[in-house]
Image (cartoon, rainbow, N blue to C red; front, side):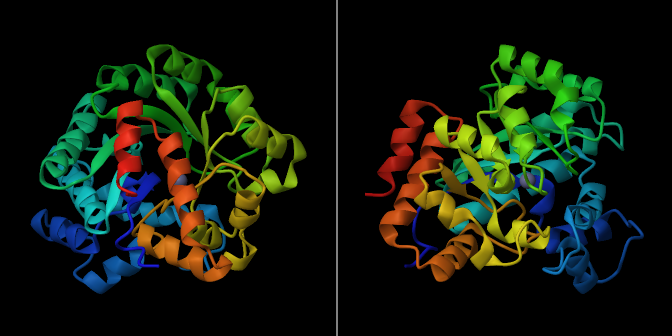
Length: 330
Ligand SMILES: [Zn+2]
């Protein structure tokens, strides 16, 4: 099937993992940052190898993009460009996530940071047939207080381009307990909630994310395979999993596409969605993820449409917007 032409939805895409190498190079030159002189080196630094040893090694590829995302202008630019890249491959709706806590090194406030990425998104929406929303990620190695600050300061943007909060970064067992208060507050304020969990072997974090934090969706969730309670909970409550196959191979969650449980999940009526995670760090696109899954599991058009419709259902948007996304299939 021609996946480039098919309408697509990406619900799990990190802004800082999806910068164009050319843009990073351009910003380095303009600011005379003494990082490197060479575009090829930058490409290497921005992309995690397929034979990465762990999630922690994978996360190192974010250092350089974060270094150049410290001004309003650059944040606006990379947000616009990600929307543009997505529109070019016929993504009709995207939820982009990023952690405002990572962009304060040159003195920007949380509100300025959020406002800047929203401006970039809005500029792209005016030019292209794509709609986007932002998810505010809180880094889980930081304190509950720091997550609370994001929840509080992002509040004014709910419904103005911000729809949800997330917890991300390295995954340790039982991390959810620390964030009960900020997530409770987030829910009260009207944020939707998605949580990275079960990405690195710890299926019980998925149960915690749903039961303790009220997660409505789970980022990855691959390791519900080793935890019966988590598996049943996801299945019974129809909690959508934001699956990102290429990223899962890089972080060693699975060995290869063939061993990815995505298709078993699909056949067992687990509500899976297909996403990129990081377009640059994982050197992928939505088209590429679709092609890999088609090739590996002989995915049929009808099955792709079901996955697309799962994404429509799982999206943090209104019923009217969901109808519009369904309309692209006709
Ligand atoms: Zn992620």
